[in-house]
Image (tube, rainbow, N blue to C red; front, side):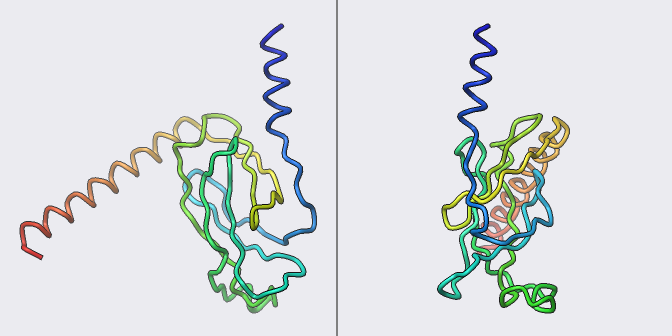
Length: 148
């Protein structure tokens, strides 16, 4: 009985009211390895790029400025073509199973995505991080040995 009540409470707590119509966006990839796409604020007053962040249970998974110039957006007449983003998320924030990821634009929630992560994907992400750390350590050792 208590577990059912806790699940209801937890699900109610997760619900985020999104601001429909605040931003126009398209997601190219939303995975444990990369979040990418484009976004711009509708009726924006200035030409500044917007800030995009993704959160899982109020923990930031990743954040960046949507300011990458993309030729496909220019050709399509979407904004000035300079509203793309691509960022590597913090894989450690994910849980195996379904993850409700909230997309924020300039601090305002605009959409909730359900991203399913497998245990295998978590292991691959962890292994990738270990290999990157080994490569960084190798570079530092080579620099120190060569005297650069």
